[in-house]
Amino acid sequence: MQKLRKQISESFFNPLLHFIPLLTFLVIGDFWGLKTAWYTSLPLAIFILIYVYFYYKSIFEWLLDSTSIFIIIATIISFFPNQILSKEFHPIIAEYICLVLLILSIIFKSKVEKRINKFRTKTISMDNNLNEHFRIIRILALILFLYIHIYLLIILLNLDKSVQYQDFTYNLYLGVLFFVLVYEMIRVSAIRIRLLREEWWPIVNETGKVIGSIQHLNSLNDTKKYMHPIIRVILIDENLIYLQQRCKNELISPGLWDTAISNHVRMNETMDQCIQRSVNEQYGLTELNTIFLSNYVHETELEYQYAFLFIACKRSDLVPNPSYIDRSKWWTLKQIDENLKTGIFTENFITELDQLKRSGMLEAGICSCKCRLKDTVYEKLNFVSNNSCN
Image 1 (cartoon, helix red, strand yellow):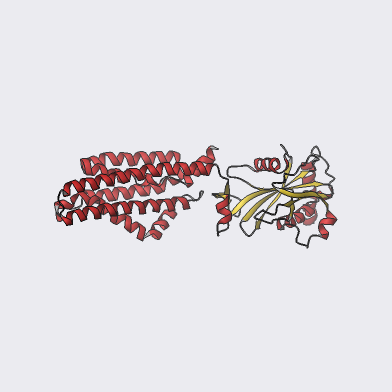
Image 2: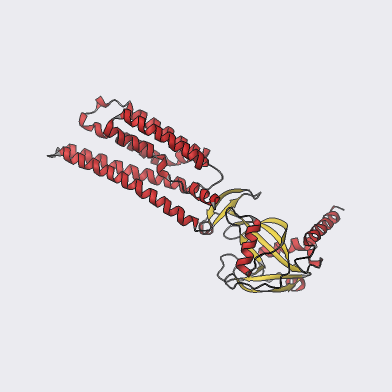
């Protein structure tokens, strides 16, 4: 659970941490001057860097880049020649410089993203972080734009009590910034809590190595296909194979006959944990002894599947859960072969049937969970391997 929590926190990192030192510099500078602003915001930026290094290390380099940009902006503000502008414009110089740089970030968004992609982590999905980062940039740019132009309008109109109007505008500006800060903190926390309750699937590459993660509904609804690990368990008894008919509301291969046990591996879940969870959900079993047979890659209309294929002995206490399985029964090899080209079997099962035939397991005489399943598998696989070499 701790690993999953960290995974979700990193994949939905609070974007305000990139901007808090800069906002602090602006506000402190307005009240107590640039010197105090440096003394306050720079240690804060260093503290955030240390915090991220220990708790979100995969995002550290990105935040380091943001901190460098903050220092550059603060330096420009500190050395800007105020004398070139009338004194009445001095209170908004810092905000104006920030606004210009935020607008430039939006204009050159693709180049900014390209730079971030050079050092962002490759082990988690960062699309959320990038989208949230630019969302905050747009919000801050809008707030600064409105504040600056309302302030300028008050000056240009030369209103009576203009100082009071300017003070009111500035206080409103601070209030909006504070509201956005609090709102985003609450919003990100709420999203993380919701994500913890959802099912996350790991994303793997062609070798089965985990390179990312994604919420399962987002994966199935995305136009891009991701590769996810799945477990597949074949139940056999001599030359009999136990098959299930998939429910008609399934997104993949609805109504087709398939291997007895099949499921997606969740994030930070081992293969064995996934198997035990699956047999409990689908058949109400608390334990199932299996042995790994092979793995393969299969493409569906919604995803790529990195399948781990296991075999297990016959169980007499199988009670299919109707929420997952419409029908189930034992099939003879002859029955399967006679219907193999009728389109009633999933493509996964057709692939696995070929592997199962080549393993020699259908003639092994397996009958109970106390049999020498592991030894039999190795004996048969070695026998097939030796004969193929000869």
